[in-house]
Amino acid sequence: MNIKLKIWRQENSKVKGKFIDYVLDNVSPGMSFLEMLDALNTKLIQEGGSPVAFEHDCREGICGSCGLYINGRPHGPGEKSTTCELHMRSFKDGDTIIVEPWRAKAFPVIRDLIVDRSGFDEILKAGGFISVNAGAAPEANSILVNKEVSEEAFDVATCIGCGACVAACKNASAMLFVSAKISQLAILPQGKVEAAQRVQAMVAKMDELGFGNCTNTYACEAECPKGIKVINIARMNREFFTAKVVSQKTT
Amino acid sequence: MFHSIRLFVLSVMNIVQSNYTIMGNSLSQSSLTKKYVVALAGLFLITFLFVHLAINLLLLLPATDTFNVAAHFMGTNIIIKVFEVVLFSGIFIHIIYSLIVQVQNWMARPVRYKLENWSHTSPFSKFMIHTSVIIFIFLVFHLIEFYIETKFLGQIADVVIDGESYPDMGLKVITAFKIPIVVIGYILSFIVLGFHLHHGFQSAFQSLGLNHTKYTPTIKLLSTAVSIILAVGFIIIPLAIYFGNY
Image (cartoon, rainbow over all chains, first blue to last red):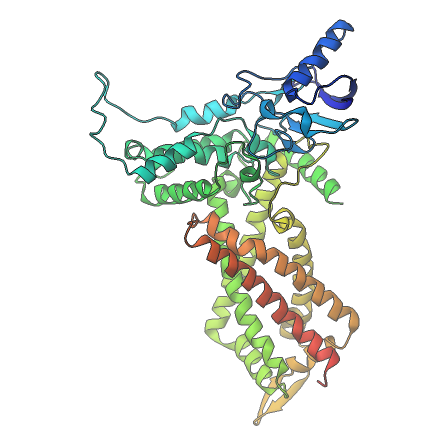
């Protein structure tokens, strides 16, 4: 296959970036998208140019590192898959592929296609924890959890924090991510203790970081590689409302 | 055009932001609080639209007497007058909060994508700000014509019904709906309103945290029904008057 690429190149967050055109021959349809970029980088290095910086780690769809905005969609074409799971067979010979980084004020570009997603870590630090007794491991069945509830919590916990929801949202809102992290704890008994405090702290941190507001367009749900549902955003809205109303503290 | 407005607003907001860390109370409110406010105000405005539609449909009766009496009641009754203040506040709050949210959303993505994504989402949800601008323009014309002119400028003829004198609102509406451009503008505005409500109604429930596997499908159906009933309901009135013998 012969592929034309339009890739966003940006030295760092201070300078302006621009699109650079590349042509890559001998692309195998069996290559993953990241392997194609590896091939491009090998070629660029051999030609004495600077390689395209992109983030990757596990290359099997569970680490959440890779995240490229390909032809107008986070993680490119295909349903419920990450960039590393995207293969070149999804494209045709001679196609032009536009590759951009996640674009959000809260995700500044570090270099080329790599963005700084530490905002997500900040949100998690604000409230994504539970209190447990230190010491010996507790008896596994001392807290009973309904099977459906545990499965629901697990489904939400599959969020890999890749940021595709922010990238897909027309408002660059992080609410799908934040609501997933709130929900995975809020629906389990172990997470109830800090529930009210958690939702307020995490939402406040999200706002502070400059993510947009949710306007219920649900592009996040459509593009989430792990299929996290927007019903979690409603749960967050509910949790936040009750927390604000019930809370003794005036904030 | 929207792109240039967006750029202008962003540059103004950047200046404002660099000078004030927190701009007023409403900007510093949580993103979720703003959602609740927009949703509640929006739902309230929908209930008002149903009342307004019910009264407007009286125009389709053979004589305008009933409509005139109803319009007079709506314009003079003390309880309705109190609600008029609530209504205008509702409109104001809905607009202001939506604008704040919109500007913040634009600010959240300073550099846009070269190729914008078109995920599998409701198309109407992406154009809420665009439809709202058209609805707002309609509202301005509407308020000038039927609120300010009749209420404050007294530019309206009187009609005697059962020995009492009423402002002839019916005649005013019918005269307006005999003008093709008014009819077309009116119909277009309500098609746009239908699109706005198709997303808005069900979206308000999600914003208030009311999303449930059992009830949300019904709420979404209701949203379609509400948007169609209101849009079609308002649209048949100018059509009937323009093409009928009123």
